[in-house]
Image 1 (cartoon, rainbow, N blue to C red):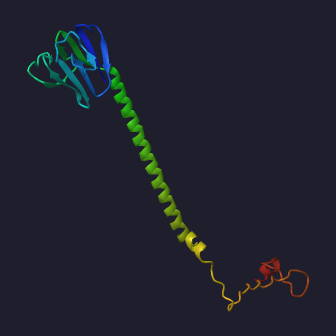
Image 2 (image 1 turned 90 degrees about the vertical axis):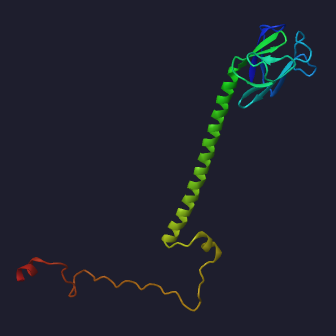
Image 3 (image 1 turned 180 degrees about the horizontal axis):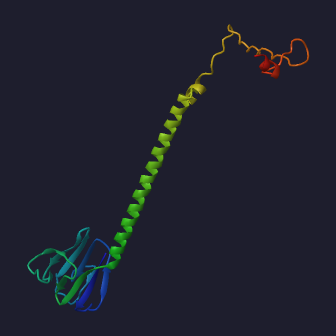
Length: 189
């Protein structure tokens, strides 16, 4: 996006903002902006490129200071002459804002993509780590547990654990003995 600021001729004092790729100014049938006070066949074709604005001249149209050149790259403030009409090329401030906004959007998209990739990698690492931890603890993997239940053999009966031996009974009777050391046993030693 750029602006043409008209200095002299019929459109003097006007500003024209151009936003598309190709724009023709002059006295040609195909011109986007007709200049009736320009000589027949005098025109300039402006092409917006990423590096700036390129101007191609026909007839007696030219850029001031570069009269013999048929095609030039315009710089900020360059004056173009088409017959009696003179205009200046001025970069539009909006284009800088749009460029900044595009960069900001690009950076946000890049950061978002990086975060999504990071989360996916962390999930993968966590799943692998949990699978290894499950194997380390002796638990079967989920795939193995679902695939085959453990076989039960009918030939080998399941042994029940034997009950522990009974504890000695404490109570009155001949078989009761004092547990631990008593005063009498300590005195006899």
